[in-house]
View 1: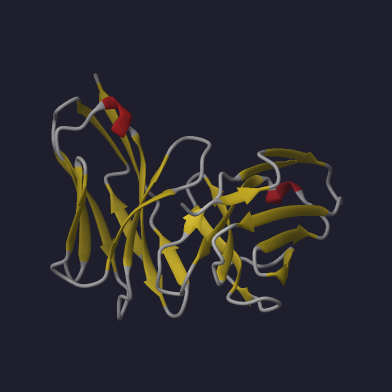
View 2: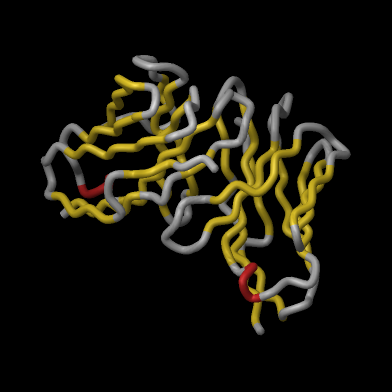
Length: 109
Length: 112
């Protein structure tokens, strides 16, 4: 069965301390890899879509990269407002997104 | 910007009640989805629709049904609510099958 695994489950950083979140997938024939940000009690907010290995996308302090087996979300010099749960999802078949469990990121001032 | 709205942010119902959750999107998207999100289980797909009056089962359709009479509106129906359906329900829409999905704010449903 196709799976998406995110690590770590939780991550605490100091403000300005850069790090990376990992998303591993076992989908055969990946059709897209998506990153979302979710704040407590709210719906996920779309961040990035990656379609092919080697692709990279950036938005402010976030950069997403994709290989044939995993994706990374790099956070450079994070601020407290970057605290959230980050979800990745792989697109399977025609329309189905399979989500990972998420990484809960806390940035301390 | 795409806007997906859900009829209620919080809902409390009793066991056995029929529950309707409504979702509306304003960007003429073809595809609409219903998920539930539970701690430790993540987001799971209940049903999706790729066209008006069309529906497909997701991973956990048991105990739920859906209706899509108009392109912009997708309803999730709990025919007889049970306590194990207490959850956060999220609606999403996408333009095409391979595009990103945009989510609504969610409805936190409690079944007593």
